[in-house]
Image (cartoon, rainbow, N blue to C red; front, side):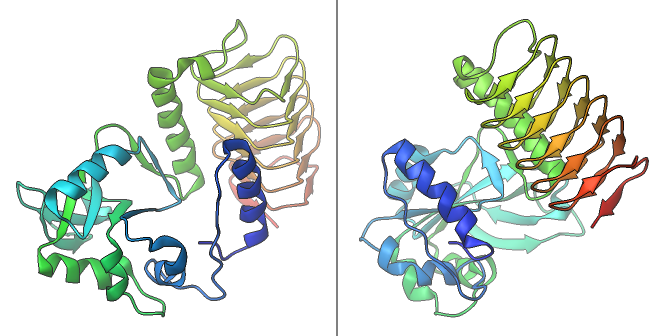
Length: 307
């Protein structure tokens, strides 16, 4: 389901469709429909008589698809949710369930401890759920799941492995670290190797890396990026088309599409650039959030937004 700037998502998905050899259909919302309304809007695409997955796009984890299918069938569930353990459940909605995995209720941001398993934003739903959703803005968590729980057909499955909410920049960088660690265990051949790399680093084959660079740990370098000589990168993500000029240092930051960081710069502390940003030579950027199409010619010694 797409709403804000749908052309960006549709263009990306068209590329992935060709790359993966699968058909990807998007359902466009003309108004925000909540977390359940988009399912009703896309019913013609989703309802083929078989259960279907619903995934929150701001989550990353080791997705247990086959295990969910097996449990969904064995329990006769109408909906199966993945739950994950967190250290601070008071920030989330806690899921209360019995020893069989049958969900009894939800407790939103509890003030006292009632459990530490939360909704991970990964669902397997049977087609009958469409009968519970009206064509209007609707919350699946607050309006649909409680009714399924009352019927006794709402179950959960505990997630083994990592999980991260990546909806905010700092969380995105944490999620990237966890994902790269998972790749090291499952697909180590996809990670970069060589004397210039430290720890887990993912580099697109189209990227160019100069001499005497030190890259890693926990770095992602996207398509058509150019890393000039003597650059140091750590715990950062470079989106497609980024250029990092010679002898610059980038740490715990996200550099946006088609942006350029000048020579001898230091960018750190969850600094973020939008699309087509230029940071001129010999600058210090500390926690700067720079909006698209801006050129910065001065230091940002303290976190601030550049509009």
